[in-house]
Image (cartoon, rainbow, N blue to C red; front, side, top):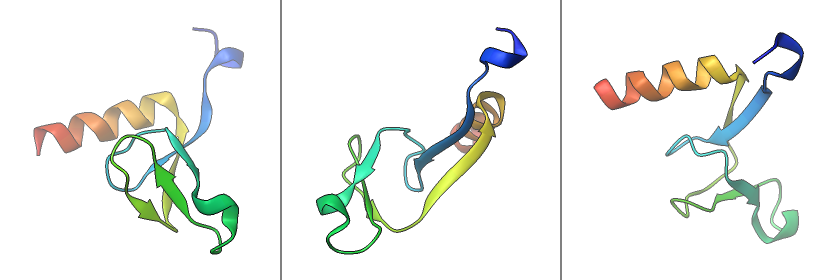
Amino acid sequence: MSKDKQLKNIEVCSNCFSPRIVPYMGYETGKRFICQDCDHISVVTIIFETLDELVKALKHKRDG
């Protein structure tokens, strides 16, 4: 993948690292997100600058 097509600033769930997060209750309760994979509700998300950084973090989490 060329450098100009790489994913950047990938925001993920702080619980399971899934990128499938959406605003919780349309921000009516403040800036909160719900993960569509683990149903975790949080005000904190993690942003990875590149896809490679996300993959590295997932491997580290898996390997313990």
